[in-house]
Length: 86
Image (cartoon, rainbow, N blue to C red):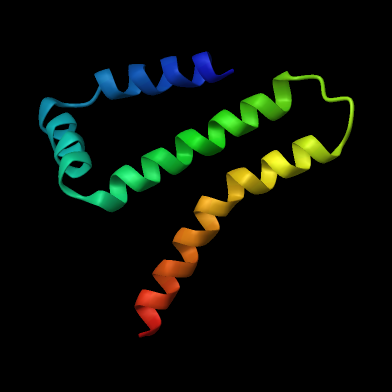
C-alpha cells in the first residue's frame, strides 16, 4: 500500500508545473516546521504499516506502537498551542 501511495504522489508531483515544484522544495528547505511535518507523516505511516503488516499475537504491542506514532503529533500540537496562547 505504501508503494502504491508513493507512486501516486510521485505521479502527482511530476504533473505539477515547474514553478510549483520549485516552490515546494523551497518551502522544505527554508522552514523547519515543514521538515518536521514531513518527518511526522513518515513516522506515522511507517508505524501504521508495521501495525498492519505484522501478525501480532498479543494486543499490547500494536497499542504501544499506536501511541508511539501519536506522541510526536501531540507534542507539536501542544507546543503550537503554547506558542499561540502566550
